[in-house]
Figure 1 (tube, one colour):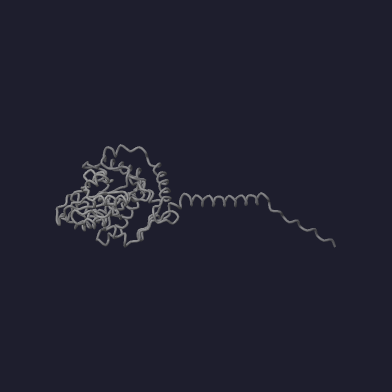
Figure 2 (tube, rainbow, N blue to C red):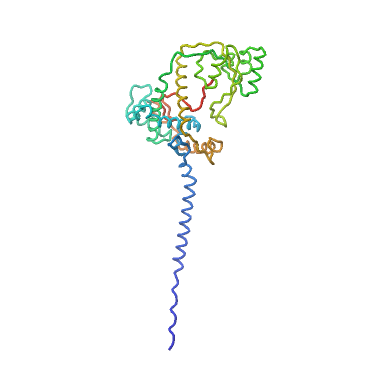
Length: 367
């Protein structure tokens, strides 16, 4: 009996197999492209760049705040954000109620009307649109910053409420130099018999005090940084101090700070003298600055730079500057006429602020 012929195996169509391969390759390419786009264009903005206690600030929001800052200064923006968050976290401890939408509306309208008594809804809407366009912030973000500034002002008033207007003062003289060697040499000249004022006029790098022979006039030592204040308090009348190292914040410096060396002399002291209005303001600012320093010391404040750095290093600064310039180019270049006519006294290129005096978490009061 003859065997049946084997049934030939069906072959899968090549076109279907080819289509599946092409589809698979296309999917892989799409996934890879999406991953590359996410890593390059989205992920950097989702990174946390600043941690203040339990609050985290993402890079995307931080960059927008740098753009909204009038000087586009990353260091100043970090300082502002740190202050806002420290105040926000401490507000309940001082019995401060949350800022209401009505509080924010009032602050915005006051800023929009400038020196005018009133402002129409149409003009206010045009003004607010310009603020949002120029700052790059959403309305929600803009209002949030205004609310934080209102809360900071309220806390400032509490912290500075007990600053007296009659305080100890000294008649202070200072010679400011760029190196410790220069300060040592200047002190040697004074110790050898030259007058403090003559040496100050000759070598001090501070133009204002140099013109006065180093004479800074009467001032409360408490408006100075802690080390300078301590030196002024402890000096005997007419005696020149040893060089005092003074570090102050300077965003134009590659390190973010400038170090100078100060020689000090006190020619008179008063245990109780009426402070001027400007001096009272400085004393209040110092009280707020001291409060912020204390809060920063008891709260974990961490900057998260590129490659694991915890400081605003040159690489991180360069990247931030590049990203900020990209964002600035997206802003409208022509201001609207509404702001020019209804709110000429307000700025249109800076982040919203209240009247809270500038405060920092580092000591920057000049001698």
